[in-house]
Image (cartoon, rainbow, N blue to C red):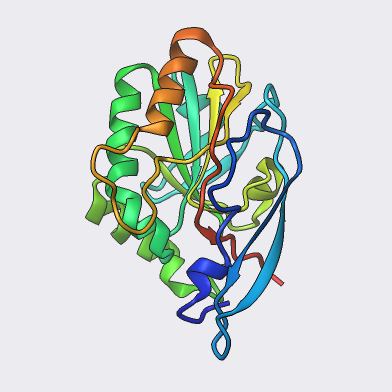
Length: 223
């Protein structure tokens, strides 16, 4: 899945009808871009945890040399756990907005951590050293940690990069949606779905009922 078409083939479920209840089983179909034939279709089964699911603790090594747990990064009003990587074109296209929203969320009491879950042996651009360079280049103000065993990604049910998990102050899942409507190309004046959702979580403890799923490159699981 490393061809030029992989970013489309490997994305999470694409933008369809809003998800009114996170935790439902979502079946999605989109065009599969093959090397020889771009007319094939690929069916993807997407599952996620239900609203209210409790965040799992972790102890992951960060690029600053520290080890972070959930308790260390959670904010007084909630927490955003974002699964990111360095190589995915969807992450590269949105990383400046992700960092900006993390800055904005910090101002309203939401803590953020970014977790890199990919197999670095198969995808060396996602290596620990490259994580350091990527974070420095884009001005990360939150911990960037590596999930070398991929246990945290599996526990959270992460599926792609970027993939967002928004929790309230009680570590209860309230948001599993997208950053915004932009994909590879920023959309002018796009609604800030992630920020608005987490702003609501900070104020009320509850996320929006309608949530549109994220899209990105599939997590590169070890074989």
